[in-house]
Amino acid sequence: MKTVLITGTRKGIGKALAERYLERGWRVGGCSRGEASIEHPNYRHFSLDVADEKGVVAMVRALAKEGDGIDALINNAGIASMNHVLLTPYATAKDVFSTNVFGTFLFCREVAKVMRKRGTGRIVNFATVATPLRLEGEAMYAASKAAVENLTRILAREVADWGITVNAVGPTPVATDLIRGVPEEKMKALIERQAVRRMGTVDDILNVIDFFLNERSDFVTGQVVYLGGV
Amino acid sequence: MSDRIDKLVFEILKAFGENENVAGLENPTADTPLYGENGLLDSLALVSLIADLEAAIGERFEVEVTLADERAMSRKRSPFRTAGTLAEFVEEVVAEESKN
Figure (cartoon, rainbow over the protein chains, first blue to last red):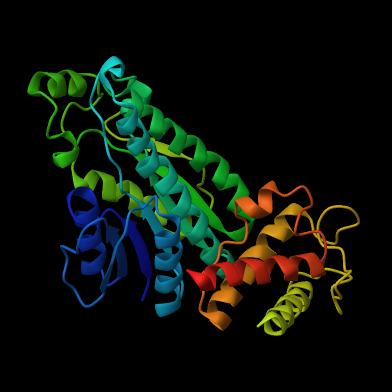
């Protein structure tokens, strides 16, 4: 049975991805700050903050020990901050970086240690179209994801010798809590900038992840794939 | 405890030397140079060794440690210089972690 670790599985895209992999017969290790919202014999939940080093280390090692290692890591957990830079509190900026950048870093680091032993592994990080589109009102969010992109590209080089690939998917807006506070006209204007003008779906994201996770994709690493033709 | 940690560190070093074909690690002693001047390991090998040690410590002593922490990285004299300094450093980290 294959094992995937997905962060941020309590709701939204993370939960939907976890459910898809469970349906496919994978063992799924998930986490969120709160309790689990998925009940399944092959699902194991860890309540933690992704930026808490000790919690991440314990989760990764426990999950690897319980099964036969970890085949894939999907760093989905993320928070957004939709605000003008001049109105963004420092605490918010730090929270965004803690979850999006440091959380992704910690999971990459710990899971790569586990994957290294088997000489194979797939890591998928989450980017966003907000970075290439330079979306006003999303400076800290886009900046944090720009950091994730570079982390992805450099880590890909650092772990390539161990058969681990590291890529990122950059979704367009998908109807989840993350974008709940965005006014409708803003969302419309954003979608107008895509080549394919519609909201994204979980299946759009899953399709890219499936490609990255495919055994035949061992020659694909350090790539960022944006959806919607951005 | 310290004897058991020493033993584990040298055991892992030996196994690592065999698996990764590192000449000079067949019978490591406290003075065996690891990383830095005359070190037997390059940076990538050090990364692998540290990860092996962390996993082994977790299994043997049931404490989850991160060896490449601020203490290790900020020291003037790296704890990864020789097998002896590495064993001392591991003892320190495990003792610290066991307290928590």
